[in-house]
Length: 119
Image (tube, rainbow, N blue to C red; front, side):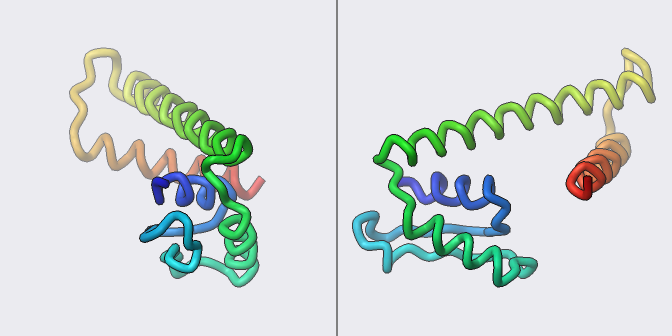
């Protein structure tokens, strides 16, 4: 099993993790999750349930992995479209992209995501 699958499922459920390792996929006691310092006790409880029920070979596990992959692809397309729009509207179609421009776009995108998350 790929630890990345489990990490993707945890992140898709709002669990802030930085790493997942799996030494023996048959022994969940060998699975380790490294949480981001911002994790709450509630998120850790949800993660525990997700980990204990996680089976990448089951249809539900495979479906969850496919949903995560589709969401990541969609977000990637949205981010690229946002960058193109931002650069086109601020610099024009012949813009030369530099580090300052990327930093400005990142800041604006982060603000948009933060506002969207707050509802």
